[in-house]
Image (cartoon, rainbow, N blue to C red; front, side):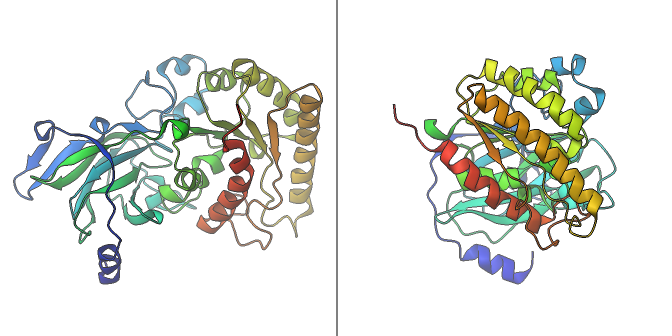
Length: 375
């Protein structure tokens, strides 16, 4: 780690986190060559997984969805997008070891650190602060994420890869240093933000897992997040509506327009919302327009695609509200990634800058929906 980064970590103010039980050291395995004791992160508890009955430990949909979901959706659901682990330790050095399920670690427009890497944050009095990322080097990578951390117990947050699956993830701390589960979130912040959408929701093309807007929002609101982004496949499928209806969410965010043609928007929006509303009569639902293509100012066809999709979406929203849905909400897309054309990799998928701007816009829409309501 660069010297300046180490000095910054040393300067972090002390935090005394509440924690859960100590993980039994006997469940870990010490490496005699390094003195690092390795623990399976499942012992710490996964956050961001909507269902416990998964086919593999780090899947995002239940095993039964293999029979109902489209093959593309099922395949992408096996990516660990949005899954994270919170833990508490006084260790001044933190290691990680993880194995991905796809040997292709990167994409042409998205780096390996986002596709297949890990991302570590620490809680401070000022909120969550980034510490380090785990840079994948092979199908199995062992990495020292950080050293020189300030002494004392701290709560950490470790995000898993966005566009790859994982078959194993371990956290390593010096042998003899306690590793604890994080205390459960307060009851009023335990229900997750549930996002259903496209490649953008899945995190394309964040440089690291903590920079997708869903993760940023999870840290800002200090809530768990369930990320059901499916690249090219966020198409308002009825079976996904049924699955969403099983989740006790704080809010449902539907962000599918980039994967739908205007006729599909008109055809599918109302049935999807009605099915979800039948299962969750009082949960807020936020409909999100597509982001404006970064080059729409100079490509009339791109601007027309945005305008036509939004017109169909708004029409469906207005009809649903007129029919009596009083907890349906709407977020316009024209300001999601800024208006200077600098927020994307390819005109469509956000850079970290685009995701940060998107998080700002989402936060403004979500804040009133998450506010305590009078009884």
